[in-house]
View 1 (tube, rainbow, N blue to C red):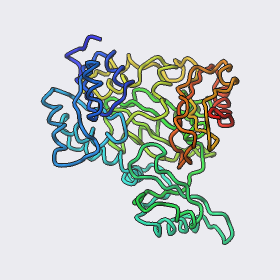
View 2 (view 1 turned 90 degrees about the vertical axis):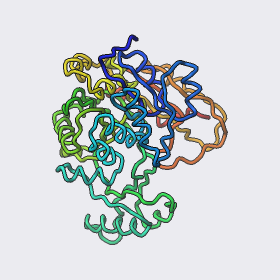
View 3 (view 1 turned 180 degrees about the horizontal axis):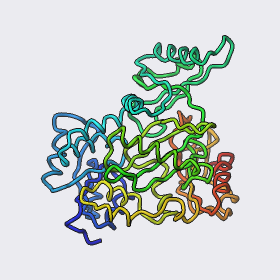
View 4 (view 1 turned 120 degrees about the horizontal axis):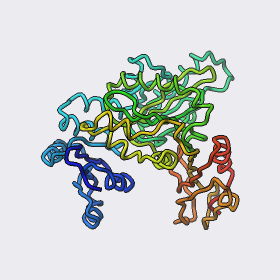
Length: 407
């Protein structure tokens, strides 16, 4: 597409072919900041790029911000959790706003994030940092003492999470002191938090000039396995409360622009508890699911709200109306083998024959022995569904858990 020189020049931080394709067909100039291994591909396909190693923070780290500034780049967009801090540092230079770097640290460190949320009057569970196994045992006992558990009562679980990893990586559930011994020393320090009972859901909110431009509610069927958009009527009835929570989050974290991906719990009495917030696209191909039902490209939406040259009128004309403009429901299921030894990929007939089935990206197994899944592990590929009824798609996604795709 013809690029408009009067609109922003955008840097994409991280390697995503879907984001690059979106940038190619959008009217903003763009450049990809990606590791060295992407260089050959970029040259071969005429993709504007700058090589950069995101793993190393050192005294050269300012160099990338200066390089992009010299090229005339206006803003950097993080595509992955690992590039959020870099975006904050780069944008604090490009936009001449040092607070953006501090903000990115809050959006990366789960313990700092929870404290900031608490300061803003947002409901969170009990949480603490753990530096060793003794801290975990002490926290487990204290949480259950607070819940007035008696000797012999089963413990309420606690959750352990890595400070700065995406999604479910580094997530453990601990119920007994004995389970603490299974935690490798190298995982410390970690964030510990009390268990929140409730219905967990996620939000994707595009923000422009400190206001919500578009808010999607993603409904998890089983966390780590399946999600669909937009949410069912049961979760959508909470939209006014959810919108109020996101507005409080925007105010608490001083967010003026960009995309946020928070997770919340809603309890049976309708109370909202904050889980965490990410400043990057969600996992499980939710951007692609949104495009399937709404028709807009979510990567382009992010470029739009990050770009300091975007006008409010452009934002208003870009986004559809939530829920009412959705063409049905789109969901996906992450397949993980249920057997310890597998030899081939075999899609069950009932899946392929279902009217909601659209496609899959599963590949034949590379090896026969299936490694034990830690936390939620990494799925082996996704299956996509789309249909008119929220309850049918929810039941269908749940049913996939009982099927074997690798035999």
